[in-house]
Image (cartoon, rainbow, N blue to C red):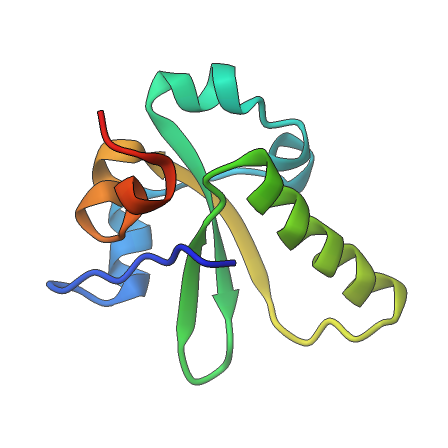
Amino acid sequence: MGLYINPKDSTKEQWVAAHAMPLDEAALRGWKYDADSGHGIVPIVVIDNGAFWAVGVLYSANERERFLSSLDYERRTERRARPLWFGFATVEDVRKVSDYDDYVGGD
């Protein structure tokens, strides 16, 4: 993953609580980027690394597949140690706390 949320005025936990809604894994796997992200929302993943949270933006189908294939590998090999939470947030909110436009282009 390359695009992360890094709020300056709050913790990542606070940002997720204020701006994200839950998304189950099946919905993430079926996410249609042209249709769903066209409505101004984008999926995110929270990775609890113990000492800190990482909040990644799954900004494209390729990025989602890279993440999910590593998750599937961890499950097959029983190496998954980090708790995960999937959600979505508005593109507008994500732009304020990330380099979103550098990855997908601005309007």
